[in-house]
Length: 210
Image (cartoon, rainbow, N blue to C red; front, side, top):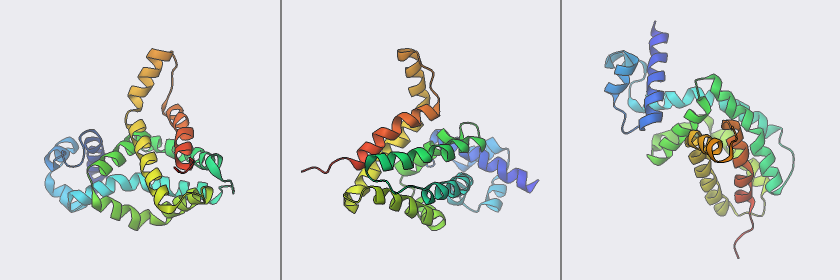
């Protein structure tokens, strides 16, 4: 029963956080959707911050080991081709998040965007403390593909690349509807990501401004 209650709370929080954001979602709304009392939330999680981290944890626990495998098998290839190959290899792990919940991939990225936009500092600490090794390995793999790009410049490029990714995934439903209406093509979230990869790879690896 306790495990079922805990899962219900995380499910309710995930839905509300992805739809409304972390700041705008109240604990009362979460308890109402999960059909539990506040004491149950406090018992299982202790605070709203811990609940937010628990929502991310079930996604990261599945995603990060898969990313580590992709990074460890990355070929020694430089330039935009190397970056694109690395990013393409991350698509299956991202799509696998759909096994955790309906539209899990889009929901996960939407949650990332919410956390980024709302400046949830505790999330960055949580992610780096628990999954920092994997993230640093991924960044190092990208740096290895782009040795000509200074570290500070790469920081900005990765920031903008993440913004493009989050925006595209958060609006993936609208993008698929536009593609259907304007070009008479049915696309799914995988197709959206595959369209995005070459754009991001070129943005990360482009020539330095003079």
